[in-house]
Length: 83
Image (cartoon, rainbow, N blue to C red; front, side, top):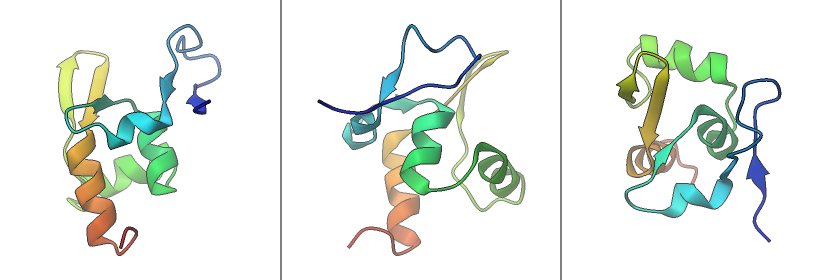
C-alpha cells in the first residue's frame, strides 16, 4: 500500500494525495507531496520559489496551487537526487 500525505488541519484529510503521484507524468501535486519528494519544508520551497531556484507552480485558483510532477522530478534530478 502506498503512503498518503496529508496536512493536519488543512482540510486535506478527506482527499490525501499519494506520494507515488510524483511518478505520474501529468500529475499536479499539492505542496505536501512536493515537500516529501524533495525533502524540503513548504516554507523552504516557497523561499526557493521566490529566489527563482524552484519550478513555478500552476495557479488553479485564489487558494489552489499545484506543481507539475515532471517539473519537480526534473528539479530533483538537477540537484543530483536521482541517478
